[in-house]
Structure formats: structure tokens, C-alpha cells
Image 1 (cartoon, one colour):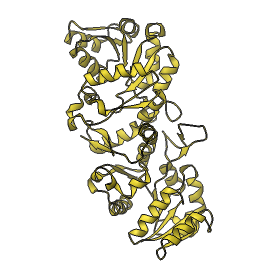
Image 2: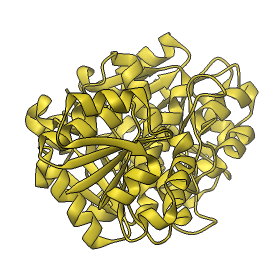
Image 3: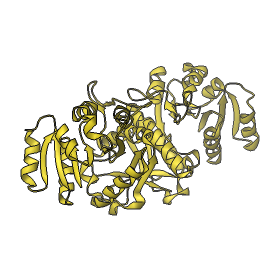
Image 4: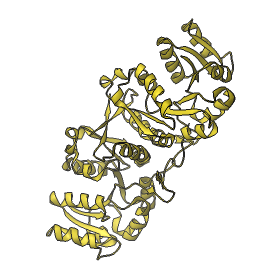
Length: 217
Length: 217
């Protein structure tokens, strides 16, 4: 598939590199066409990798991964242009962590809304699927790194068909079908985004990001 | 020990009954001394059980369990009277679920604060420990009901000694030491309280409360 990855940070680079390794054509999108990290990604993965502005990448792709910092995601997607994204799936991995008032960070959207919902509201003709935002990026693309891949990834979104496509991508990353938990519509992104403060506390108490939650019964 | 349990709902009754079964003297506190559910609790557990107002129970006890509905907890504790609680441990199990705007509920305190913090702020001479608020009450007092009791309970609070006493109570409920995770000070109650929307989504998707989270690495 032709896939856009918005964001050149650790999450974007990890996702984009994994997608290339799976044979997808990946354009990394950022604010400027000459972003240094995006250029480094292209040089490292010659053939399938390319780079451009958010708008370039959105126009190129069938599917868009939002790996931008959550507090800037709406702005980044606005730069991409609704016309370049309409009808497409936006896989939203971002968390709107707001560090402006010190530690612990608060969430830019919470309680009565979520970043996932805000993106869906701002771009109503896209299909937003929230997933993978509950863990360190190393685990996103390599769940077998811990506990035999027997731990949870969540999916939230309004479009059933779009969620099936996202689940297939998750399986290609190594996620086991029985650990992919479809929570329901995009409103359920509140749950996975509001889980972040607990994640951050555990990360703080244990000093390692290589953990995840498993639901047991 | 002499323990007060504030609240006559499912959580209060479950906790109070377990404490009596462990040999503690338990006074169930509520708004009025003649609460019908509290009277039923006393009749069922004659000898160790008693009932009274929040103030009666607070004055009686060495330790107070807050099992009131979270949106009314500050009011209930205010009725109990700071003078009856000062120097004592308040074990706060409540979640401030606000159903006034329909489903899903929002939280009355979130993101930049939490109910646990608000209680500590309102009653600065008590020792608030947040725990057990991340699960169905049946599991709180019987963790071995699922997965060999190998799943998580969290503890948040400012007073290290108070947390040790609470951990001992948790162990008496059947919690395994290695699954009692001390997250840090009372601010970390934000994490466990903000986990509730995810808990509710999973409960909605699976239709059973007998589940809990286990962190794996």
C-alpha cells in the first residue's frame, strides 16, 4: 500500500521503518519538504521511502498514520488539507500530552472529548481509527518483544471496514488477533488517551517503557 | 482494628463484610443513623458490625474507607467532620463518575486533579491513600477469583507509613505483594481515576466486571 506517516520523531520513524520493511511505499510527511530526519529516513530505506510536506504525503497515500505530537496534530492535519485526506483512513497514534504546566503533563483533550474525536470532528470525511497510543513505540511494531505478544492493543473508530483494515496492519506488525480489542466508536478513544497518566506513573515507577497491559479474567 | 466504612452501596457492603470476616470491628457510616442498608449489614454480622452517621463512624474508627459515590464524597467526608478524621488514614476507593451529561460518564475531577487529591486538599491532616478504585468490588476483596490473583492493584498516597498499613490490609484481602504497585504520591491517583473510561469501555465490550489489568514486560 501507499502509506503516509506524519511526524518525524521516534514514533513516526519507528512506524515508517516497519511499514517499509513490510514492503509498503511510505512517504514521511512533515512541515517542510526538506526535514532532516525525513531525509535520513529516505536515505536509509531507498526504493520504498520518500518524504514531503504533510500535503504531499496525504495526496500520495491511501492511508495516513498520525504520529505527530498530539498537541500539534490538528494543526498538522490542517496543513495536510482535508481535500488530500477525504475518504482515507487516518490511523491516529498521538497523545495530546501538555507539558506547559509542568509535570505530570495534563491532556490537551480529555474527559468530555479526546484527540481522536477532535480529529474526526475536524475532518468528518476521513475515517479516524485510534490505536497503538497506549504503549512505547518499540512495542507497537514488535509486540513479541515481551510476554510472547500476549498483551493488549486497542482500536476505536466509527467505521467498521476501516477498523478491519487497521487490524490487518496490526497483525502484520505481529499483534495476535485475540489481543486486538475493538472498544467501539471513536468516543472510546477517551479511554485509551486517559490511560496515559497511569502509563506515565508506571513508567516513572519502573523506569522502563517495555511494558504493556494485559486484561485477565 | 476499628474501621469505618462510608457508604452503604455495593462497594461499601462488600468491603465492610470482608473486614468483619477478618475480625475487624466495623461501623458503617451513612447520612442518617437509621439507614436501612446499614441496618441490614448490622443484622447480618452481629457482634462486630455497627452503624451510625458519617460522624459517628469517623469518631469510632482508626481507619476510614471511603466507599461513597465519588461525586458526593467530599460532601460525605465534610459531614463526617475533619475533627473526627484528623491523623487517620482515609482509604479512598471512590470514582467521581458524573452521569449528568449522559453516557459515557465524565469524571468530576480529572486531568489536572483527581478526587484523591481533592480529598487530601480538603482534609490536610488526614492521610489519604487511593486504592482499589480500578476494579469491580467483587474482585477487590477476592482477587483470587481470577487468574490466580496475578493482576494489579495500585496504591497512591503521600504518607509512606499509611501506604504500608493499606498494603497490609490489601494482603489480608488476598492481594499478592508483587502485584501491589505503589505509584507514588496522591497525584498519581489521576492515573487510576482516569483509567475508568477505559475500564468502562472494556466492561461495555465484554459485559462482565470480573476482569482486571496485569502489567507484563
